[in-house]
Image (cartoon, rainbow, N blue to C red; front, side):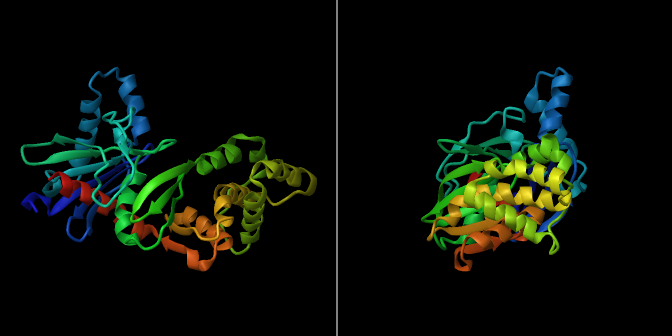
Length: 317
């Protein structure tokens, strides 16, 4: 390994978020972490309003300013950038890589740009299938291959605004599907007629059954036949808006996962963090047998993301 690769800077640059981590390459230990900053969407808006012409230079200047906010000893480390930086609203409009996702990352598209004579910035593009595309999740998936360790063929679920279901076969991800569950929930809960009947509420033992009732209905019939009943229950029976909020969540997640409840032999890997992980874990525990489910939590997912970036770094060194 090059003496300059004992550490690297991990950049997770999403549509609405920005995060830098200084990482020890061998152990993936995070030595320093910096949150905040500007997501790709807002920086793109700023770029357009400034009538600037050098998109890459504009975004690179911002990235450099964020790196310079780190302790000075880290300024010249190589930088791995995953997420929306490679989209048409980001730094560079890179083509998508191709499936399968394998441990050697051979299908990935990576653009290398020099920061100095010794150090580089590696921009990692997304991956496409015949019917979909993803940016950011491919880096997590690449790292998760190590933790899954060719265990059992199955489906990897990555919950999010646009949840991804990746088909895992023979130690590689061979295909995937996208589900707009998170975005649909936001639209329905905040901008539809249902919004007047809902109140945001976290999952708890007191409201768990409302989520499960929605999950059961969504997995059985799909979401459409049950949506208006949430409004009707409020108007006619003064239903608890917090419980209705969880019921709507259950309906949408049940609809997303319904194909798994009808499959007797598909193994399920679930990787996520926070409230979404809790909801999907509870849902899968109802829909599949316990011997068909393996869960990776927040620490596992962070390690996978950093492991994926490390693979790209070492491949391109």
